[in-house]
Length: 346
Length: 247
Image (cartoon, rainbow over all chains, first blue to last red; front, top):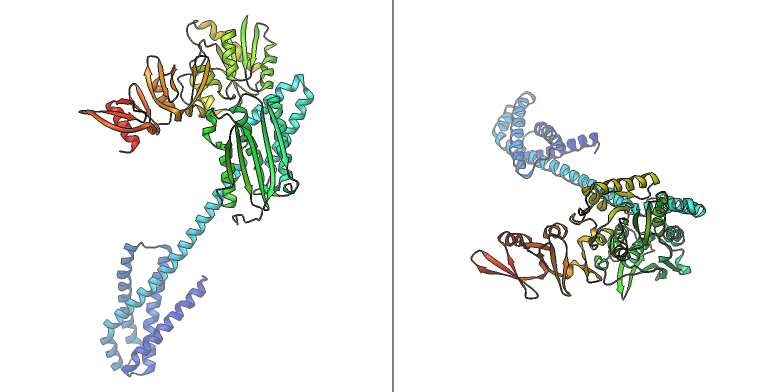
């Protein structure tokens, strides 16, 4: 709140309580002017004291136990105010009768001043306390948002160094004997890497775009693993324009390739199917696995966990990634909602 | 003449080793293998002096393959990027090539191996990686054993209990008993300590198989497993078991 507004509030406060004071003293039937002078003086003093103490609370929030100190504090302040008041009133008013009344009513005034100051301090304390709480909540929310963005960023960037170095090794192996192919692979790898860096934060891309990136990836993997790796990509026409978070498809396929190729020794066929169901994009990735080998028990693997986590952070739903084992086939089904009811990231 | 094998699941990765070997007419390639199973057979058949071995391979990894080989040849590991493997290598001062590697780096590794070979006596194994725990994450989840001519991959869930047996460890499973040339200490370090407890100098049990702990006499206890087997608990083993169970 602006400082001038605060000062006006205090002035209003002093005026209000002066009014109350006058109303209380009226039945005593003293001169109204005298009563008003008296009331204004005392309440102004109390308000100044309250302002000073309240400003202190802005920088120092006492705990509940220390809060008991407020009682003593306000009593002390009320005492000082009453003391100063009793000197000033002598100087301000010459009516002996009224001064005698003031002298008699000093203990009452002290109690009144104490309660008033206590009220003022409590209001101040509550005001700054809620403000502090609000700021705390805001800081917390901002921190969480930052953490979530950082996590999403790393989840997207999880390019397997293994893939990169093995691809470079393949290129190195082809350079002398098959320079043309080596050059093609360098280009594919470059395009692939560019695709993984270019994507902006939280960008949604169409399935058609994501498939282009996937093709680069598959082309490289096929050079690496040769005849062992076969792929079938079947995409319904109405699914091609649907959107999904960038770089989501590749880790899914990478996971399937890893389980397919490392879990079995024979040829491996990975099939990727995309359809549109109820306006949602459904992606199915299937790979063979050996039920006897222990890889199956490890369940989803790191790649799937990161996809699941990403979708959870984006859509706040834990059920978008489903896996299924049927005979020797492992199927991962991912559902991408299209209606933009994403968790807001503002 | 040095006889060697190249074991790697990527054909191009094998071809570059073969290409670099053209500079070394004293080395012949007996066979190229695309997985660990082929590797084991080829080692038995050719008894090579040296193998070039990849770590990440289908079904069983390079380390697991080595464990199943009786006459261990010299090994130069080739791997792309692997934190787990590098730790194992460095702990044992084994030479390894990080893909992609140059002809010079390859020559140096070969030279280093040859020098080492002339110094070491024949009965001393060139390397002993077998006692380094947790070389790859999957080795915490499975145990690869040889049963006759078969190679079995046992998920750790299927293990009923482990028993020390001279230089071997007896792995008791639902499907029977398997022997593995390892120490109890190795499994104590490798297997998940929240699941497998060394309850005795000679016994390790999975918590999931435990049904009851019974007092035997003063200060001594036995563990009763689901299949009815009774495992003696040592004093420290009993304490460890209680800690894991949160008692």
